[in-house]
Image (cartoon, rainbow, N blue to C red; front, side):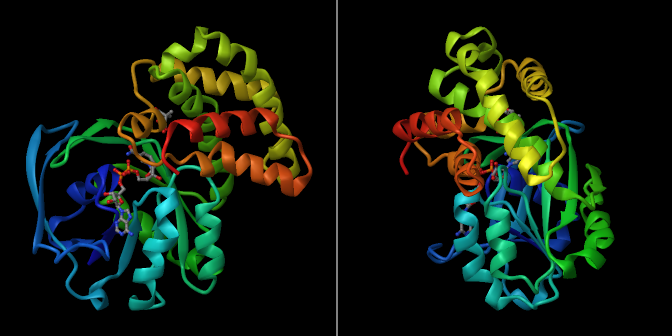
Length: 298
Ligand code: NAD
Ligand code: KPL
C-alpha cells in the first residue's frame, strides 16, 4: 500500500493517478474521527473528469511507500506523528518546494530511506472536493540518506505507474536548487504585488531588485558547491518561467489570497538563513521575506 500524507492538491493528484487499490491517505492527527474514505472529483488533463474514492489508512503496517505532500512548514510535525508507527525500511518521498524542510527530515531520521522529489506537475483545488491537474510536468526523485540509494529505482518505478514522467536523480540537491531559484525569483514578487506571474516582468519593484537578488543567489550557490551560475543566467531562468506561466497565480500569492501560511521561510527565508551561516549578505531576500510575512499569518 502507498500512503499519502497531505491530502491537498498535490497529494490528491498522485493518489488519483496511482493504481487505485494500492493507495490510502494518512489522516491528520486532529481528524475527528477520520471517515472511511475520501472522495473527490479529479479533472485529468488527458481523459476528463473522474470520481476518486480512496480509503484512509487503517494499519500503518500495510505501507510499503510513503509520499509526503504536506506544505514545507507542516512536514516535520506530520512525520513526527507517523514515522514512529512505520517500519524502518519504508521509503519516504518528500515533495515540498523550497529547501530546509527536506534537510530537517533527513537529519531527524538519518537511518531511514528518505528521498526528495522535485516536480513541475501542477495541481490545484478550486473547491474542497475538486482537484484539477492544471499542468503536465516532470518529476525527479533522489536520495537524501544513504539507505535511500538502493530504494531509488523501485520508488521511481512505483511513481511511474501513474503515467507521469518520473526520473531517478542521483544528485537531487541541485535539482531542488533549480526550483528554489525560480520560486525565489517569482513567488514573493507575485505575492507582494498581488499579480499573476507574468505581470512582475514589467513592474518597477521587480526590475529594481531582480539583479541584486540573482547576485545573492549566485553567490550562495557557488559557496554551497551547487554549480557556478552567473546572476544573468539565473535572471533569464526566472524570467522565462514567469513568461511561460504568465497567467498563473503562484502558490505564494494563492496562499496569501486564501489567508494561509506561505512557504516563504523555505524559499527566500531559507536563503537568508543560509547567508547568515555562510556570512554572505542577503538584503534583498530579507526584504522579500519581511514583506511577505507582513502579508500573511505566521
Ligand atoms: P496543500 O495545502 O493543497 O496540501 C497540503 C495538505 O497537507 C493539506 O490538505 C493539509 O490539510 C495537509 N496537512 C497539513 N498538516 C498535516 C498533518 N500534520 N498531517 C496530515 N496532513 C496534513 O498544498 P499542495 O499544493 O498540495 O502542496 C504541497 C507541497 O507540494 C508544497 O510544499 C508545495 O510547494 C509542493 N508542490 C505543490 C505543487 C502543486 O502543483 N500543488 C507542485 C509542486 C510542488
Ligand atoms: O512553482 C511555482 C509556484 O507557484 O509555486 C511557479 C513555478 C512560480 C509557477 O506558478
